[in-house]
Amino acid sequence: MNIILLGPPGAGKGTQAKMMIEKYQIPQISTGDMLRAALKERTPLGLKAKEYMDKGALVPDEVVIGLIQERLKEPDCSKGYILDGFPRTVAQAEALDKVLAGLGSKIDHVISIEVDKSDLLKRLTGRRTCRQCGAMYHVIFTPSLNKDLCDKCQGELYQRDDDNEDTVRNRLEVYDAQTFPLIQYYQQKGLVRKIEGVGSIQQIFENIVKTLA
Ligand code: ADP
Ligand code: ADP
Ligand code: ZN
Image (cartoon, protein in one colour):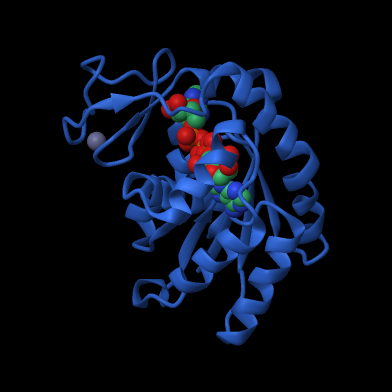
């Protein structure tokens, strides 16, 4: 099962992907996580990407396409995967189609998670992320038991540099201009399943599972 999770920043893609990993036993592939990992290692690619991420702009297509191309060849992708945060432009989607055709593979489902803009701003500015395991929390909606520590691994919770109000506003504009058109791109291929992204995390997950059944 090769799945794309589509939706604006803050829609809950990462939150749902983490639950899907357990249920379906397939990996989550997040270009955002890959870029942040490269930055943590201080690789040239990571340092270059940071300039774009800090502004809330997209990293150039060829950079993320290269990352994905390599990642999809890994053996753990053979039974399927969840793409989270990729593709984000029509050029990326077209490149993905080419890569997959070369591997004799294709996308099976595109889950489009829908949330209003006013909710997204609140979600992103209140998001906290575990430095150790990547789990997501929200200071109001889904707080951890101990304010600064992850419930799952006791790792330190931090606020991403790009989760401040100014950068978030820019990311939402970039989404509208560059990523939103992908819904139509995949609708033309008959792959899009829309999911209401507001409500309990568990209920949204159950709706995704039903859609994939
Ligand atoms: P994305 O990966 O799409 O950017 P995340 O999964 O990181 O989104 O979620 C963004 C923020 O919203 C996080 O703080 C997360 O805890 C919170 N969140 C996720 N799903 C919901 C939900 N259904 N209701 C309220 N808050 C949510
Ligand atoms: P969110 O979960 O809030 O949507 P991500 O972690 O997916 O955020 O992305 C954070 C940043 O990383 C983006 O604002 C962008 O700068 C960069 N990025 C991640 N994925 C891509 C991509 N597919 N194309 C271009 N830039 C990307
Ligand atoms: Zn953790």
